[in-house]
Image 1: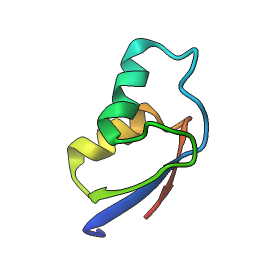
Image 2: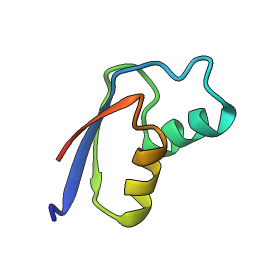
Image 3: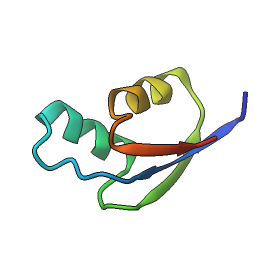
Image 4: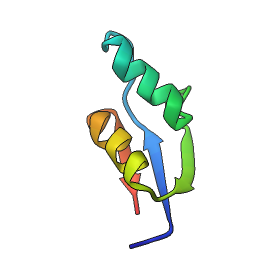
Length: 59
């Protein structure tokens, strides 16, 4: 498994429940097409799974 994971927000969180929007902020995704690289942890994978319809993951 890679030590880091890179992901990009490709869809807006507008109209999503507050929990989904809070997860995006927790991931560091505050704007469309922002790309973030983080350490690959089970907690991060869970957050990405929750917003999988709004992000694109590049391992």
